[in-house]
Amino acid sequence: MVLFQNNFVLTSLLNIISYNYLGDKMNELISIIILAIIQGATEWLPISSSGHLVLFTELLNFEGGLAFDVALHLGTLLAVIIYFWNDLIEILKSFIKWDFKT
Image (cartoon, rainbow, N blue to C red):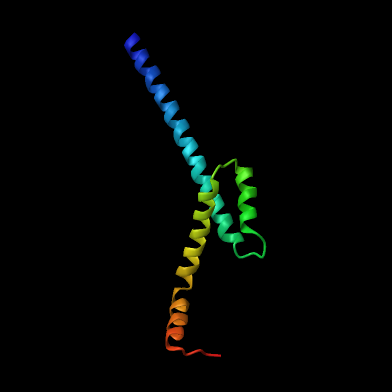
C-alpha cells in the first residue's frame, strides 16, 4: 500500500508539473498568436504598430523583447512580399528593361 501511495504521489506530482509547464507554454503561444495578429492588423493603420505591440505586451504580461518585435516585423514584411510577389517581379522586369509605363 505504501508503494502504491508513493507512486500515486509521484505520478500526481509529475502531472501537476507537466500541466504547469504546458500551461505556461500554452499561455506564451496564445500571447504570441495574439501579438502576431495585432501586428498584422495594425501595420496598415497610419499609427504605430510598434506602439500596439508595447501596449498589448504589457496587457498580456509577455516578455518578448526586441528580437521578438523584429521577428514580428519581418513576418509582416515576408507576408507583404508573398502577397505582392507578381507585382514586384513585374516592377523588377520593367526596371531591367528600362520600360516605364505612365
